[in-house]
Length: 402
Image 1 (cartoon, rainbow, N blue to C red):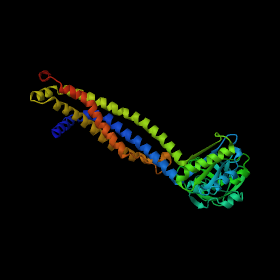
Image 2: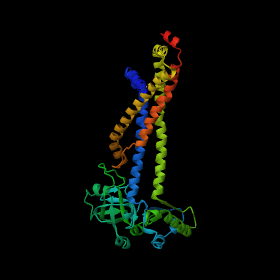
Image 3: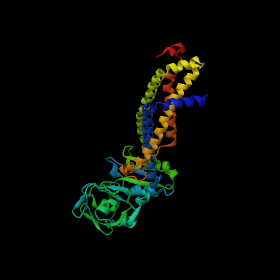
Image 4: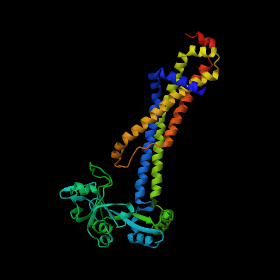
C-alpha cells in the first residue's frame, strides 16, 4: 500500500513538473539559506577556535584601567608572576603609546594606521608569532633599552620591498633598527594598511623611555598548564585588588572565556538569521497547501471514482499527504544540494573578505538532517488539510463535479 501510494504521488507530481517546481521553490530557497547561514556560523566559530588555539588556551589577559592604572608598576606585576612559578610560566607587558610618540615614518611617507606596541620577549611565545626574517626581540633588547624593532609583513613589503632587515624606521622622533620581520598572518595580495599584518613591536622598556605618556595597561600572562587558568585568574584578581583597592580598575579574562563569549554571540546572530531564513519555509508550506487545494479541486471526479470503487477515506488521505510530503521532500533534497554547491563556491570569496584563508562555509550534518526533516514535516503539516478535505468528499457529489 505504501509503495503504491508513493508511486502514484510521484506520477501526479511528474505530470505537473513546472507547477511542482514553483511550489517547491520556497522550500528550496529556505533550506539553502538555512544551510549557508549555519555553515557560515560554523566556519566563523572554527576559525576563531583555530586562531585562539594557536596562541594557547593557557593565556590570560589583564587590563588595568581608570585613574588608578598608574598605581600598578610593571615590576609589581612581574613580582606577582615570579612568586608563583608553580602556577605562572610567563608575562609580557603591552605598553600603549600616544599617537605623537608612535607615529611611523619611512623616508617621507607616513603610516598613520600602523600600530606600535611595546612588548617583552615572552610576548611572541604567548601569541604564537612566527618569524620570517631576522630574529625576535629578546631579553637583552628589553633589559638594555635598545632601539630595535620587529615589523609586520605589511611594512616589510610596502615600505622596504621585502628587504627590511637592518633598515631604520622612524617612530615618533626616534630612529629604530629593524631586526626581524614577522611571518604574514593573512595571505593578502592587496596589502591593506591597518590590517593584522601592519604593526611594529619594540621593547616595552624602550617604549616607556621614549614616550612621554606610555602606559602598561595590558598584560599577557600564561599559566603552566591549561587546567590552571581559573586558579591563575583568581590569584591575579586577588593581588590586583590588594594593589588597587578597587574592583573597577582591573579586568582579568582568559582566551577560553573570550572564545566562549564570541561563540555565544555568533550563535545568537546565526539563530536570528536562521529564523528569518526559515520564514521562506513557512511561505513554501503555504504554497504547498495552496497547490494541494487546487489539486483536490482538479481531481474531484477522480476522488469520487476511487470512493465509488471502494477506496476508504484513509487511502485518499494517505495519497494526498504522500503527494504533499514528496513534493516538500524533493524541494528539501534540491535545497540541500544547492546549499552544498553554493557553500563550496562562496567559501573562497568569504576567505578573502574575512582575511582568513582557512575560513570556510561548512554546513554541519545535523543542520542538513534537521533541514530535511523540517521540509518533510512542512509537507505533511500543510498537506494534511487539503488531504482531509479530499478524503471527506461525498462520492456522489464528487462524481457530479464538472
